[in-house]
Length: 49
Image (cartoon, rainbow, N blue to C red; front, side, top):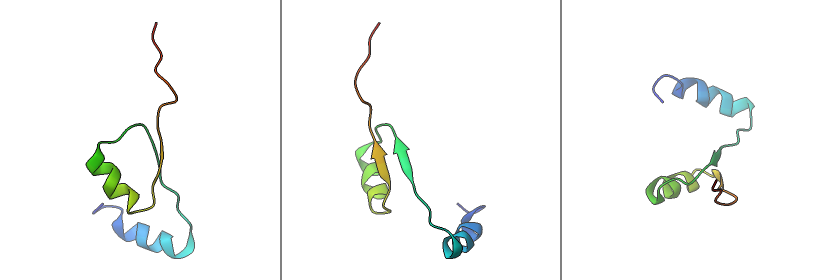
């Protein structure tokens, strides 16, 4: 974040951002990202050959 942090602050002033995660994050990461308003999309089902 050190590289994009200042830019993200400027963008937040003029843009609406949306954060999405596709997958299954570990519980600690999920908890941290939920606090930031991230939307999660988990797997639809297990596929096997």
